[in-house]
Length: 187
Image 1 (cartoon, rainbow, N blue to C red):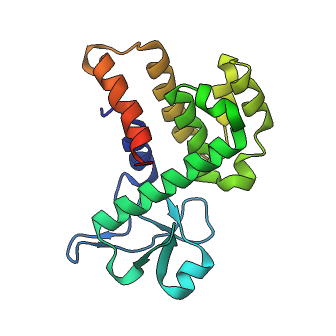
Image 2: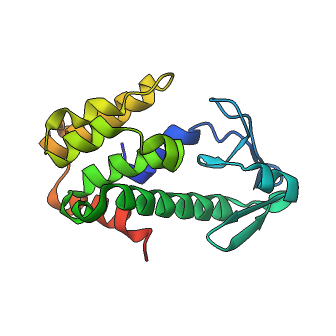
């Protein structure tokens, strides 16, 4: 298992490569599990504006829907993840920099999947997180995403305790890689 959070998140978002066409080597929007507008690639929830214009628009970059490559899908994921980290940092405030990389990642995941309005309603999560209450992780529970939440909780628990079996052992180099992975989206 790859222990990086963003790799795990991409697997949780689209482990079966829904919307990928191996003949044309391109991605197209697919039905979202949660309903509403379709999803593209690794969790990019399409907006009505993007659907109408047939172009993904994020952080000033445009990706025409008729030719989304795997490289584009990766870039869209990276830009979405950057935005989610910025939103999470804005919500947490000045204490963001005091959180370890794992707490930042778990917090950014809320924003990645729920958007700012819904994620920022998790007041108990924020209070417990900032109080360094270990039960903050239990506050990420959301209806209909139990297996996803369990995977994130397991990742967090393993990251914090380093209680891996031999096949999943994580050393300091891997911890640093996880942190670099998370921070690389800002480069």
